[in-house]
Image (cartoon, rainbow, N blue to C red; front, top):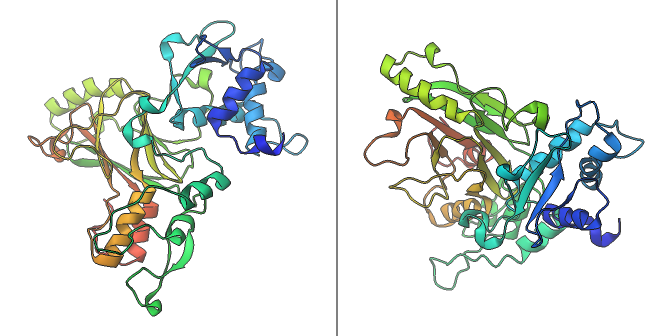
Length: 382
């Protein structure tokens, strides 16, 4: 591949593969070239042909440097998982399940390429999927400016905060002898701490608490399959956090009955993950899911997650800007905790969170530990 083709985003790379016509079953679904078909045959099928059916997935693994012919063992399942996760996380694509055909002899999925105007507002500024070189250029020339509270003093995020993970940082307004050595920001295009602490609550009662360490994020779901059947989709590398059995919790019979009606609608759950530019979520379940957090549009009325849409929950630039302001001028401590509510509207001024049937708190641990290392007052991550 020439130098020009080494730094393509998934969207650009995939469009180039479709137009090339060299992959069996990969083609445009409409004349406007806004939807495309991607072959999706499982390796367990008797007529599976790795050279054809896994060719696109292998090409993506090779392009991302995850597979080298002659060095690495061929793993079609892992190749497929990697591209599937990339598609699921990308804000550039939306699956069109009603057009997909997964139970035929030559199964395929259909995706739609999203235009900028179709994406939720909080995802439009995402740099996810860019290469390190592209990210460095974007961040160094970022035209997202923040107004200064002090006349004549720039409040732009210092480059060393935005681009470095382990760095000695002297916050503006502090003497040079007051520098604070602390992890502040992932290296460009990388992140060292993907961990998420997830707590599940039934009617305010803590029933499950885990720390997810997978770079693919954490699935919160009911049942045993995150997105459809693993027989079709292949294994998922994301951590799986299942809703505990209602019968095993000390809840009133009426509450248990209501939860028993809600849980089946949460089978496919939600996927939450940490990326270089923030924290994201994607809802797959039929049941409605609402949220509150740093980027929530409303604080006094419900924020709904749209199905099959990637939503940005925390923006790294805004978080670091708020942290910078806190250190420099005593501004509010930056928010980073995220609350999810399953099946019931939230936030809800008429009912407190601990009265909702099922809620979850998601804490990106990189933010929690950063604040601890800076000795900023805060409550313990719940």
